[in-house]
Amino acid sequence: MKDKKLKKTIRAQKARMGQGTSYSAARLAVTHGNGEVPQEEDRKSDRAFRREANAAWLKALQHAAGGKDVSARTWTDPKEIVEVLRAIGVPNSNHMFYPTGGGNDLGSASLGKEPGCIELFCNGEDGGRGSPAIVKPRSLTLNAIAEIPSMSYLRLELDELAPSGVYDAVPNGREELTETEPQQYENRSLWDYGEYVPSHRLVTRWLHGCFVIFAKGSLYNVFNDYWKGDTYDGRHNKMDAAEFRRHVDGIVSSAIARGLPTD
Image 1 (cartoon, rainbow, N blue to C red):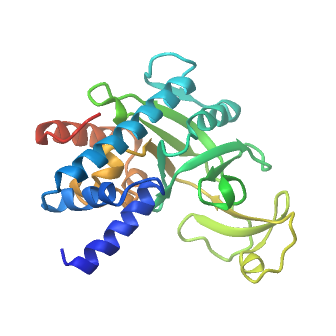
Image 2 (cartoon, rainbow, N blue to C red):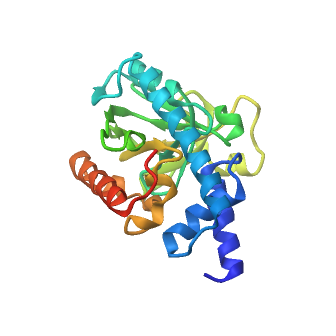
Image 3 (cartoon, rainbow, N blue to C red):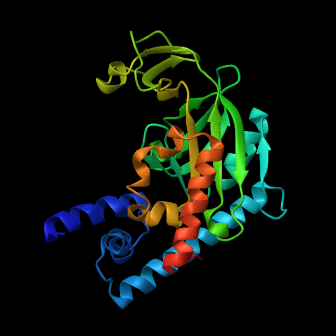
C-alpha cells in the first residue's frame, strides 16, 4: 500500500475507531489486515485500546441484562429496548452498523414521537442528541458469543415504517428530513439551506432493515478486512438473524485459528 493511500486509509479508520484512538492503533487495524507487519509499539497501543473498549462493552451488556451474565435474550417492548440501548451507550465502547452500510457509535436512545417508534442518537451528531434516527423496532436480540465474549452483539430488527410522503420514492429505505413539528416533515433541503428554527430537527427515518451493534474494539469492527471485505458493507442486512449468527461464528473460529488477539 502506497504511503499517501495508507495515510488516508488510516485517518478514515481512526475516525471509525474514535477520537481517542492513537494513530498507531488505527494503523494496526489497517495494515494488519493487508499483510504488513506492525511495529511492536503499534501492537501494544492497539491491544490496550481494544482491551479497554471491549471491557467497557461487556460491562455495558451486563448492565443491560440486569446485572446478570451476558446470555442470549430478546426484547420486544420499545420501552425495554430503549433502556437496553441507553445502557450500552457508553463512549468508546460500541459501534453500530447501519442497514445500508457504514456506521457510528450509539450514544443514547429514547421513545419516539411516532407511534411504536424509538429514536437512536449517535455520538458525533450534535453531541449525540440532535439528529436522531427514527426506527420502528420489532425486536432487539443479544447474541452471546462464549468463545470470544467481546464478539457478543446486539441485532435490532425493524418493522416496516410508512414513508413520510415528502419524496416520490425512497429507494434505499431511508429518508433524511427536516422535522418541523412532531410527525410533520419537510424536505431535508430546508435544513441544508438554513431555513429552520431552533425547534426543528434533522432526522433520518429508516423504513425497514436491521442494525447490529458490536464492541468498538471487536474483531468485527477493528480487523474488518479479514472477513471477506469491509464489514461496513451492510452484510448483516442481507442475511437473516440465523445466517448472520453463522457468519459471526465463522469469524470467531477463523480468528481463533489465526491467533488474533481475542480479548
